[in-house]
Structure formats: C-alpha cells, structure tokens
Image (cartoon, helix red, strand yellow):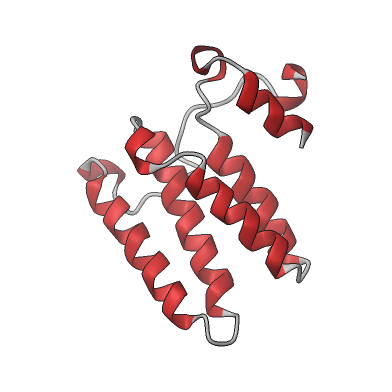
Length: 123
C-alpha cells in the first residue's frame, strides 16, 4: 500500500508512472503462483485500470499493459467458467499489440530502458 501511495501522490512529471503496470503485474503473478487467485485478479485489474489505454502514451507503457492483460488471461484460463474472460483479455492484449510500432509487436515487455533507481529509494 505504501508503494502505491507514492504513485498516487507524486506528480506525474517526477516518476512518470511508467512502471506501475509492470510492478503490479509482477506482484499479481507472484500471488497467482501462490494460488491466491482473488488477490492476483485484483492486482491485475489495478495494473490495467490505473494506467488506462487512454493515458498510455509510450511504447513501454503499452507493452506493460499488454503483458498485464496476457498474465490476467492466464489466470482466468485456469479458473472454472472463466475461459470467456481469458479469451476477451487475450483479444485486448492482441489489440494493444497491433497498435504498437511494427518493430515492437510481439516483443516482451522486458525490452525497455534500465531503471537506475529502485522503488525503495522513492519512499
């Protein structure tokens, strides 16, 4: 909660909020692996909602949001009666992928710049 509050209260120009979908998706994936699907789902939804496509103005952000959709789809595909949700999420990820510049389509969200700071330094 404390780390997210930094993103909520900090001016966009300071952090850029570029990494939020990635951070939330990684934490959600950990919960998914620990069989805590409900918590993972909430984190994936936050990764997608907090950085809506309307506000995504960089390739890196779009890659991160696409990855969040794909990981969320994996979670849903393992849940009973959630296959339809998984399909919709995969379609959303594919639509984002098609909106990326041609050289970035199909690339991993890991293809980006290095961070020379850690979130802990910001607290």
